[in-house]
Image (cartoon, rainbow, N blue to C red; front, side, top):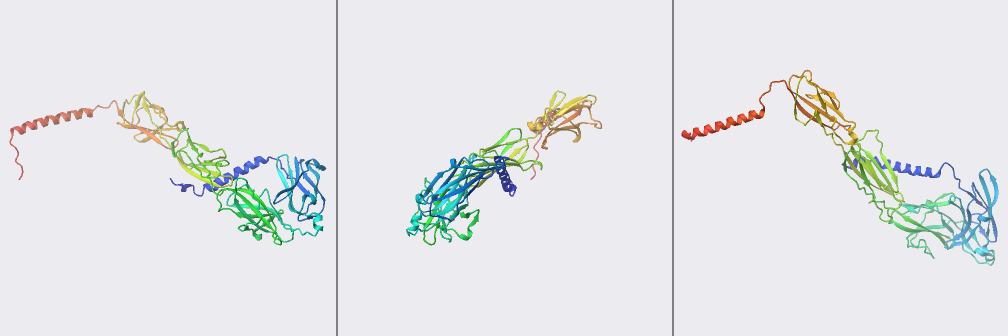
Length: 501
């Protein structure tokens, strides 16, 4: 058996089932109600320079009051300032189910110091979801600017939390915000490091010479954030730190941000352990995928997708598909004979899929025929002598088959190979139009069209009995023995017959 029978059928079929199951899970998780994300609005202006103490006003609009609201300023060195203003939220309006809360945040350049900072306002909902609002701002204490000291700002840079996924395969979609102090765009580059046990712990005093430049023409802008696709298909599986650098072309000052990612380019190895053939019946054929593995990341998080198709089935056969993170085995019914294709597809956290297939032959077992006439069991090629005037009960109902076929057996009776009756048993008399001996055959057929039969010779009891064959053979043997003895004695009294020269 080759796997060519499934080419072109399973990839699309499994992909469709897998996507459907994911969509179905998402739909169930969301529920019938629509959960709108909160609207965060402030007086902060992207690229603004704050020289003196400033109070920033803002509002949060949502259905329910947030359980926390914070403001954070940070740069490449870490958090420069943090404040939790949850308790300071004031109800501003109540319009139907949409509420508004007002807040204020204070920017004090003297306490914060000069910085190219990312402002992050975070709102946490009762569901645990966190929503953020980002701004790039520059802070310069007024006293510093008045002293004539020239502050050369680096650009701002921040990798967004929604950037790509923690698990990545082949490519990583980098989303970030960055702004230069001057109108000129910053120079952007990145470098990927194999990480140590402590992720994103290295501080950079200069941009590595082997960092990869990000082509500005390949950057897309969406909702104020930049997006760029980074090729990672040549990386081996493991943890990596992705560092993004933003440099001010005017003064070579730079900032950077880091995010740890899991690279998973190698698909898991799917292994099926199960029988290649089994007899039909009500027992199960069990297949196990527990030996499947992922060398680097282990089996945690793997999704097992099983599919079973009867390749010999009718058009109304529905393929079996089951999936789940704990679905490491599957049982296949064997009530229908045929060739089954069992496929295991395993998806890892990064979406890589490994697959294995195995064929299962469910072999049909033909019926075992048992025949009785009267109360006497009759074997195949046997003989039965009956009277033309008598009635006999012929019975094949004791014939057996596997449980799945036993209730659907057909019984065909033939006289001299001509179908005459149908049924498990009946009363039987000498058939009309038959003058001499005849052959009676019972054929038992299951619902898979497999059959077995018994044929017997039926003789007329009233016909003149001829000498039985064994007696004829015995008489012939005695005559031959007597002839041999007489020939030997005759040779003793006669001369030898001359040989031909």
